[in-house]
Each structure stands twice: as structure tokens, then as C-alpha cells.
Length: 525
Image (cartoon, rainbow, N blue to C red; front, top):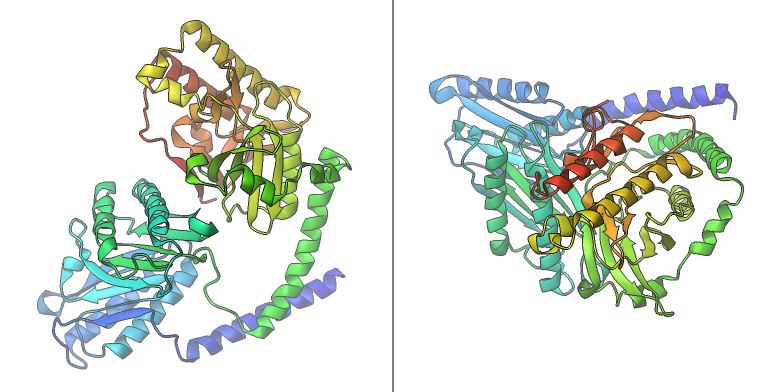
């Protein structure tokens, strides 16, 4: 397709897009997901309170920051009105403002004279009141429950997995810093039920008060009709949590009209063809023409399921940042470790197979060996050799097991880790930066030989490259080089820094960061 045609399509797309936005703004707004008109008294038309309210609503929308949050007050004494807005953490700023403006119009329509109101869509929430205590950041009150009427399969097991997921997300949200206290994730419940969850506090809360607010939500979980259901949502004055069996975050805010869809598809096809051609050229140029070799590594799902006893909790070895790991036994008696990757890994099938082939070709006595994989839709499994003595951190940070690590054995382990890193950086066919080297990712075999694990986050390097930038930061914060954690710049030096932290743990084994939090976020570029 010629460049001229591409430009025409882009012009038509932009023209129709602007036209559609004008139509939508003039049409009937969608109903709010929830709303309530408070009993704090009424105001009269054209009163000072109404003028202050209108001014406040305009101010709240315009003051929304990059974290999707704003609060303000307007007026004095009995005519003073305060408000607060919060958008879901993955919503773009402009879409956040549109969402908040829509709530403002709907609440003025639904609560035409009430001094207090609250409402929201899936992507944003707004509340205002003549009581300025809604801006309080140290005390919190329950506001709403929502739930999916469908019962979960095996409710008790479902509740257990959901609770573990929400607790993990709570810790991540609390540690979110001053920008965004927001975390999402997913887990697999009984009978392969997917559980997606979200936890969020307003970013102005301290970690302690974010935890306090979320505790109000968690303590109300048993009282919520959502308990044992396939989905639920609890909204507290400054925080909220939500879970359900289908993915509800990182999704489009609204379905565009057909004309926009058609043009978007046309343009996407053009761009995707170019991108796919570049990706295939890159893979073939780096790995050669034998990418089909990866098919020989595929396992049947039934074989893996039988090996892990249907992914039973009894065989669960642990939970990594990208999914759970299970112990299994193949029909030939070989013990394996199976990593079940999260459904939202962000990789396409071709990229996934490329990574599998890449890792399978890394052969070194100090690397965990990849035996094979399974891929079907969102189900992605990696099969590794089983390493019986668990991870190094379980020895370093356990006073009883630590006694097994005399200095001769420690020297042998640290030397093996160094040899593995040198192989990844210098001796393999492809330069690999691990980006998450830590004690928890060093496994020990029966003879206490170290094997570096978890290459799911490693990034492919061309041999003539020395460093790279990324907006996808992955790893464990305490082991990260400053330039990687703060600016997304990583190189072989990033792994060397992590190795240095690991060596320091040898001299004085102590969990500086308790517990170790695996992080995965996008930096503002």
C-alpha cells in the first residue's frame, strides 16, 4: 500500500474521530455504575452554594494530575463545598477528565439540590459535600458494596486464592510511593477459574493510612454479599478494591463507532504488517532460520497437568512475579518444575516462542535448564529441570539452614553464580541481561551447586550493544542498580550491581527489605 493511501486513511481517521467526539458529547451520557444523594441538606437554585459547587466541579476536572487524582474546596462557612476525584490507575489523563466531567453532569441531574453526592463509573469516581471531612486522610468509612450474583466454583478455595491475591496487591499498593498507590494482578482459582483484582488508594495517603483504609475494606469483605461470588467491589472513602473472573483493567474505556473501528483496523493492519516483518527479520537474523526447532520442545497440556496432579496446591513450589511454580513428575519418572505464566504477560505467540528457543539454547552448568513449554491461547507453561534444594535465600536467611553454608561452600556457590553471569554476558551466542539477579533466583542442586533461574525477564541484546533503555522496569527493588530503578537504563553493569548486593548478603545475611517485593511498572518517559 502506498504512502499516499496511508496518509489519506490517517486523515479520514482523524476527521471522523473529531466528528464522533462532538456527537458523543452532545448525546445522552451513560448511566453511572453507582450513585447516592446524601442527606446533608439541600441548597436552593442560584444560591451561593450552587455557584460554589459549579465552580468546584470545573476546578476538580482541570486540576486532575497525572495520577488521576485531585481534590479542592470552594466557598466559605456554610456555603463551602469540598470534593475529591480519583481515576483508575491505568486510565489516561484526558480520558480521566472526560470521565469525571460525565459524572459531574450526571450527579447534578440525579441530585439537583442535595449538598452531598457520590457517583462513579468503572474508570473514575467523584464525591462532593458541604462536610469537609471527606478530605480527611486519617479516618475512613465504608461507602459501597457491589457483587456479581454468580457463585464461584468451590467458594472456599476461590475465597482463599482471592484473599491471597488481594493481600499481595494491598502490599504493592501501600508501597506505591507518592505517585500512584495502585496495583493489579491475577491468579488461578479452583478448576482453572481466573481471578483478576485491583487495589487502589488516593496517592496523597501515607503508606500507613493507605493500609488503614484498605484494612477497612478487607475487614468488610466477610460482610459483603460478594463473599463467595465470582466478582465483587468494595469502595471506602479514600480507597477501593475489586475482583472478578474476567479482566477489567487495562481495557478500552468505550467502544468507538463502526466508522472509527473500520479505519482503525485499516491503519492497524498497515502498521502491524510492518512491525511483524521487522520482528521476523530480527528473529531470523539473530537466531538463524531454524526457529521451527522450537516446536520440538512442545509438551501436551494433558502431560503437564498429570505431572503436576492438576496443578495441585500440594505441588506448588512458590509464587513468582509472573506466575506460580509447581513440582511435577513426567511419565518417564523425571522430576520437573512447571512455571504457569500469568495470562497478561504482554507477549505474542511469536515473541513467546522466540524466548523459549533463546532460553533453551543457553546451556551451562550454572543455569537452570529449560526442557520445554506449552502454548495455547492465554495458557503458557514453561517446563524446567527440577532443582531439589530450593533457593539460596532459604539458606542465607534461615538461622538453622545457614549453618550448612560454611565458607568453602559459600565460595563455591558465589563462584558458580559468577561463572553463570559471565556466560550470559560474554560466552553465550547471545548477550543476555538477567535484570532480576537475587538470592531467590539462585537455585541449589543436590550437591549445592548454584543454578541461576528465571530468565522470563531477561532481555535479548545484540552483541554490539552495551546498554539499553526500557519503560518496563522489572525485578526486585533492593537488588536494582540506581540507573535502572530510576531511569530504566540497564546494561551488564546492572547484573554486576545485583551480584554485589548478593555478595554483601553473604557477609551479613539480613533481609534488608522484608519481605522482598517483586515489582513491575512503567516509568514515565
